Length: 306
Picture 1 (cartoon, rainbow, N blue to C red):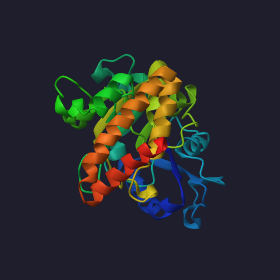
Picture 2: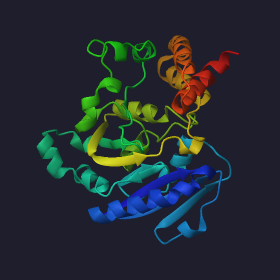
Picture 3: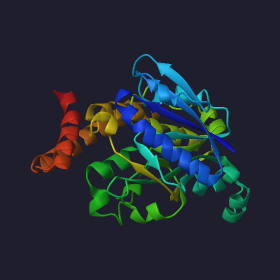
């Protein structure tokens, strides 16, 4: 069996590529799978030592964002199934083997008793932070209701009443169908992704993954989570250890306007502003490294109003 692996990277990611690729190769060997790598140099160059027989390169002259860069790689994929991996991830030895039933489908479909099991488009693994904590990657499709629940913190204060994937900790220990999974490391069905048009390239970073998951669901495809497959994620290495509040706000706005119209876009932005202001006050009182990063993120979100 041959799987294609698409890895889009910028200049800061080059030091991470070796471990990302090496762990993928070890996992593939343990599963009896061969890999074909498609490296997308997003505004940078491909390291010469990575230009081997099972490697191909796509060079983009400037950083065009995650969605457009990955799409350029997906256009080169010829296999039925592939992997989209961020360069700041490391694959555990048993990860690919744990995902093989989704690729082979037959035995698992009968176990699930699900005649539509063949409609799987994406399978996401359990993502672990360097300290071993689970990263919250099972996310809701954004709606005005979900934004309200998140920004008012109701999903944390009253989880039994205001349910959200963000509070379902037990969900990270069982395989199940879900609405959306963050695109940190995905097993993808090429035909399904191509049928809905891949990532929307209007997103530079953030929300391109939930946008794709929403379009796949509307086309009748499914997204699954499998915790037996495990990935370690060295969070935000490309951005120097922090997320971009400005890009987050811009992308959320594009998502809301695209799917729900201007009225929801305006209300969603107001909710995000109020929630970010409250969080900035909270995190601004603390003096730890993580608190400073959080405060910087929310300050960045609010800066658009200046």
